[in-house]
Length: 190
Image (cartoon, helix red, strand yellow):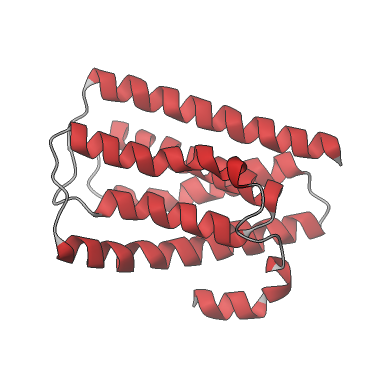
C-alpha cells in the first residue's frame, strides 16, 4: 500500500536527500534512545534473533505507510493549499496522535494521555524535520528506529518510576520546543 502511494504521489516526494541537514535530525533520534534507556533501566532484556527479525518487519510497515501519508501526502497537500508551516506542523501532529489512539485498547486513562502526548510530540518533530529538509526518507528512518527500539525487548516495562516520568516529560517538552523553533525559523526565512 505504501509503495503504491509512493508511486501515485511521487512528485510530492522529490525533496532533499537523506544527507540534507543531518544535524536537524539528531534530536529526533532521542526518541529511539529513550526507548532503549527506558526499557533497559526498567529491567527489560533485549530479545534474541526472533525479536530483531520481528522488530524489523513490524517497524518498517508503519514507518513507511504513516510517513508517506502524514508527512508526504498530507503536508504536500496542505502546502499546495497555501497553508503555513506552523499550520502543517500542528495539524499533522494532531491527526497523527489521534490515529495512534487506536493503540489504547485495554489502557487506563493515564496511559492513553501519555500515548497521545508521545505520538503528538513525535508527530511534531517528524513534521518539523520534513518541513525543514524535505526528505521523506529521513523521517521514515527515524520513525522506523522509534518503533524498532520499542519492539526488540522481550517485554515492555509496565510501571514507570517518578524519575522516568520526569525525564520523559522533559524529553517531550524539549522535543516539542525544538520542533516549533525549527519550523518557526524556517517560516521566517521564507
